[in-house]
Image (cartoon, rainbow, N blue to C red; front, side, top):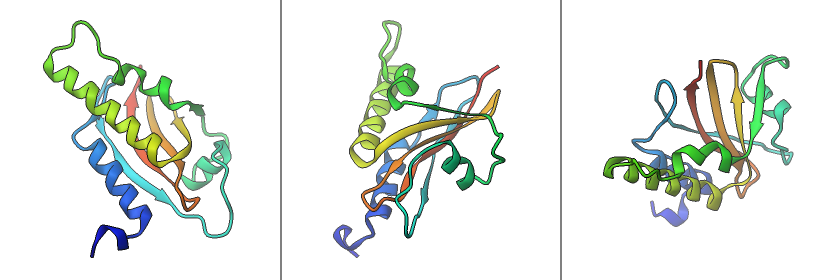
Length: 141
């Protein structure tokens, strides 16, 4: 099967998977990224707190913070004077990941759910009005 005959959502998920491969989000503990896709048949979903909690089957009173993509990734995409070659390479990979997200998704949001052990969902709309993105976890004490 050629790429052109594949489902566009599957192609997108593969791009996200490749761009996030071998990356661990920096926090007090490092976790990998997982890709996800939420399909919507009839409606055009608005990415907001209620939709995210419903899709994740979380109670409506769950602590959730919605942030923009650039501030969220700032620490991972900014090269520092003290970075060695390995850190500089990681920064480039994160810059590439953000580029892939921005080129393939619209209405991008980052949802931070919980305290201390925080579930992260980087999500946006696909061309077919489904929602796709990456999830990971950060530890903040």
